[in-house]
Length: 65
Image 1: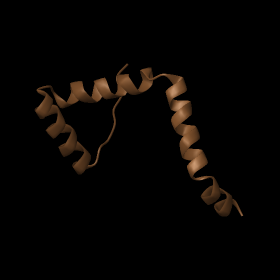
Image 2: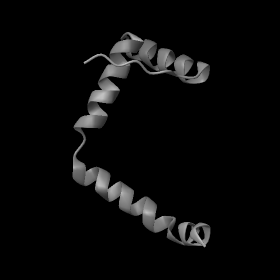
Image 3: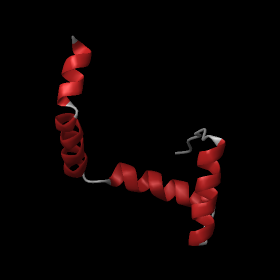
C-alpha cells in the first residue's frame, strides 16, 4: 500500500538528519517507523494509553464539566 503524508519543515529536516545518521534514505526510515508502529504489541499500546488516561484523569474530569 502506498500512502502519502505531509510533514512540517522541521519534521522533514529531523527525519532527513536521523536517516543520514543511520545511513538510510528518509523514505526507508519513515516506512520502517510506520511498520514498527503498526506492528507494535496491542498490549503495549493499551498499557501506555491507560497510563496516560490515569495520569490525566483529573484534567479530563475538569474539562468535561
